[in-house]
Length: 151
Image (cartoon, rainbow, N blue to C red; front, side):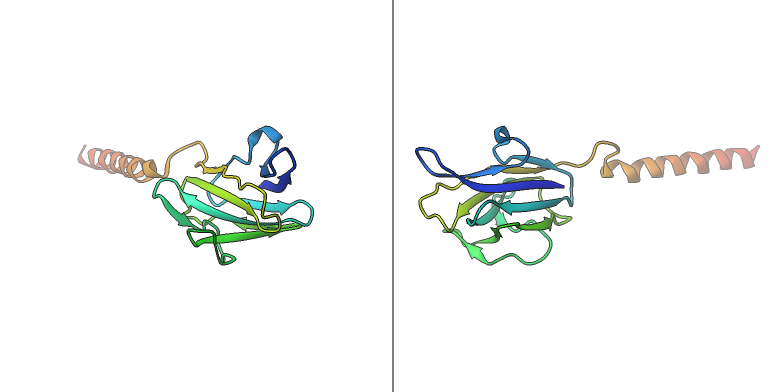
């Protein structure tokens, strides 16, 4: 399970920061289909997260269950993250490339952040190959049986 920690970083310009494992990841994460993602907020800040399907160019809510209402200029469905946060599971039909934008609603002067969640199928046999391979194996078995019966 990936954990995404949200905070407001104090530099010359206050910015929302997302961290998955290291400071260098910038909030980008790679997860398998239907993964659970734990969202946490540091301190007393409140965040709103909106999600964009890069392939279909549409605002979406990629998790099972209800969103926390629309947010932002595009009225996108959002996830509210406070304190210890919450865990959400990606829908089975979630797109493979999702950009998420994070806004701090308790600190209006903090610049938003826009990292990525990339969903990748686990290595191994592709689901697109299972049916053709199964049919080929069954065809070979039926052909061998027919040949044996004719001899």
